[in-house]
Image (tube, rainbow, N blue to C red; front, side, top):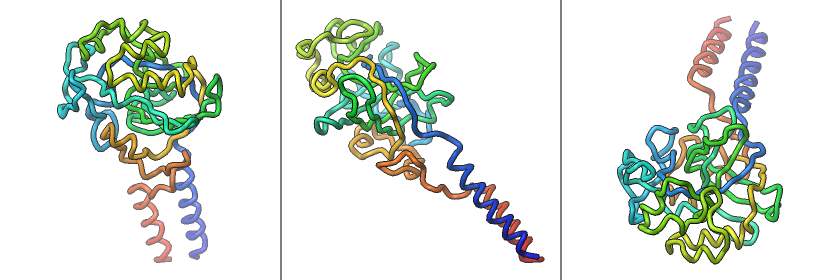
Length: 267
């Protein structure tokens, strides 16, 4: 009489494992853009996701703030983006960086502080890869998956937050929606922004909106040491694959399994 119950148990375990692994997608295709507006990143607010702490912000002197409730410098507040949350090249084909992210059919608790490997699929940088952390949200375009790469001098806005943060004319950051026009224009940026502005032309080859294939990966310390943000589900991923590890059963599933087991033993 116990064989049917054993079959039920094995079927339940198989269903639970498959359903938990297939609830969400961790990879896909996306477009990329550039931005740098000096505003407090959206993932810097408490409660945006299940993480160790929000993304680090900085004051007008580019020094870390401890008050995560501080308002954004784009609206008269005291919190700004930290300049070290910008890209750098590891070699000719691989870089680290940060981005504002939007993934269709999800909201920002899905991506805030998550890390993604991007493989560029178009333009002059086709074949190059980046690993970046989502420090912001790109809600201004919601029709496609998008990674807005945080690149000083790569784009700007009309908020004038960069001018307020660094006490320089907003014009040094380039044209709204475009950024600076040439590598030499990077020389006019604040010193802390110059290297990543050069990156746009030296590694990124000033490529406009290249497409990518993306997959979620475990965040490297090189990124989390900068933002101070690590998601609670980090250990569900490894550093080379977007596939989640086999997750433990939920408490509800465990309780149901216990009932099935106890019932089978009585028969």
